[in-house]
Amino acid sequence: MITVASQTTTSQVIPLTPLLQQLTPLVLKLTPLVLTPLVLKLTLVINMDSQRKFFVIGNWKMNVDKSRIDSIVKFMTAASLDPTTEAVVGCPSCYLSYARQQLPNNIGVAAQNCYKVAKGNFSGEISAAMIEDCGCEWVILGHPERRTIFHEPDDLIREKVTHALKSGLKVVACVCETKEDRDEGRTWQVLEAQMASLASSISDWSRVVIAFEALWASNTGILATNNQVQEVLSQLRQWLRHNVSHSVADTTRIIYAGSVSSDNCQQMARLADLDGFLVGSAALRTDIIDIINARGSYVSRIVNFFSEQERSLKRI
Image 1 (cartoon, rainbow, N blue to C red):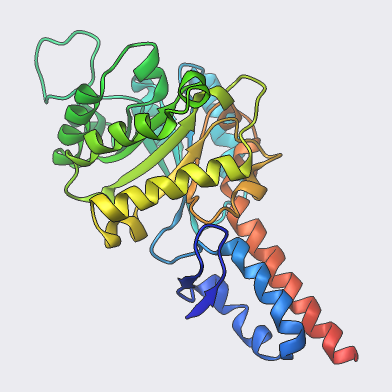
Image 2 (cartoon, rainbow, N blue to C red; image 1 turned 90 degrees about the horizontal axis):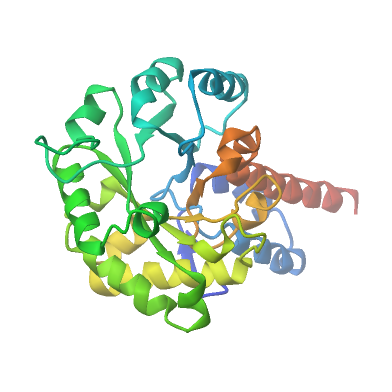
């Protein structure tokens, strides 16, 4: 175990994952004088916890047809994807089977919505059973566009999550804040209400990923700062700790959605409480490869950094 300082807590204990184990022999060879500043570098990979596998889901929304799917599949299958990241795509319901057939098994497929019951007279809806029948195991529920455009309330989203989980699906459960929420200082009040509603429907948190989106930083030209993102993610994790359990807080993946691209993903992947991304328009471009590989790329640089320090010491 390694204990290091965090920006959000006085200290955190990091289990030695296989990635961090690469650093151990290098660290032990360094003198205490050199070691102190180098250990600070590890604060940037603080959530490389074996309990929380990095998770990236690219949401295609209503932006693809079969030809576009073929193009995306082509560049995703040709790329070298970080095996330590769980990659999923969010697909329109009419193409779920097609996407599942075209994509390799190491890339999951999610529906973008489902209804709260198994069957019935609900024109235009899709059930959890239909999603599973297409060979898919994930569904996105409570997406901000469902909340704002289609006016889905917390109660309906809770019922959808309950049914999806009971049906055997895994759920990306979304919470969000608007510009008005932030401007009026009620961000946490809104998020807490959304989290409380969701939590009442979840018994198995191992099949849930929480996605936070700052709507004011999505397709607006405004980017949330890393500090703003980390602050909210940390609050969400603390809410889980105090209202569900310490174990759930430590193991549940919390991801960020909001103008994530190849330009900012590696910096954001360093955040202590961030476990991945829900990606919008960048999921339609090759940017998604960099985003999937964001955590692994940073780890490689850290390992190379320590290796270079070892080589420097040998030259002294």
